[in-house]
Length: 328
Image: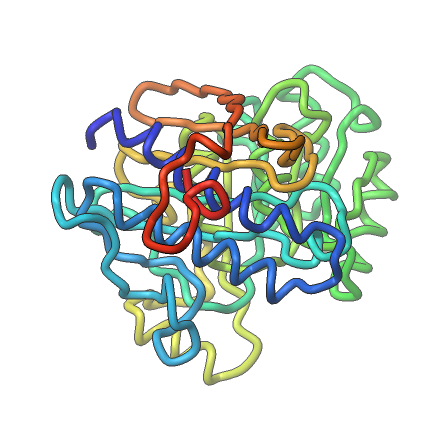
């Protein structure tokens, strides 16, 4: 893929973040999500790709825009798979809580897992944990392995877990092992990325979250040289059948990073909406808006942090909609 796509993708997530960020703390997660979707879709159609959404807002009959199978881009350039979450953490924005991001990943056609909208069990850590984790092992054993591999004590490790009743036993076992825990209310893509970044204060993500979000996280883990193991977690026979209909075969087998993101040419980009573990949220001040993004490319291993200041009065307009409000 053309490396110039990296900056184009940043412009896409910046637009979604600026649109959604205006609704931070307003208590309306649906309005914030819709604003992000509208802005992201508008910007995606200016990018020189022939993209197909493989991870999106849902099926065509339940998501009018950025639905799975939707064609995006201006019809030129590389044929690519596109995974998007215009607003990862809708509740986080509605409540003004940390780690809401606008996020997307692209890879050559056929390289991103077409994950159904169901739960997925996940275990993520940074480069120091490559080859040492086992999804079927007790969490305490995985923590001991990670501590040994990274030359640390288990008590120095911090694990991020979604605060859900289904994780009660997992949380108890982590505490018993002696590790620190950071419980989050929503949004497990950002902490998965943080687990692979040195100095983030996060060493591992564990637990059950959304499968589509798992693919987005896997794209970042691939770029950062981390480790990720996953397994679909269907809740009923209908979900199992849906997974099989999407070509996933044995829906309960353990998925490695190579299963989630094939090849070595993926781009991942995220822009902060609210302040988080690795990027700041959107700042509004008069005619200026400040955004912070991270963009990664697995082919080169490059990770760039992009801090941008957008002067609204200088932005062009698309039709009646000011570009300053919804796109850059």
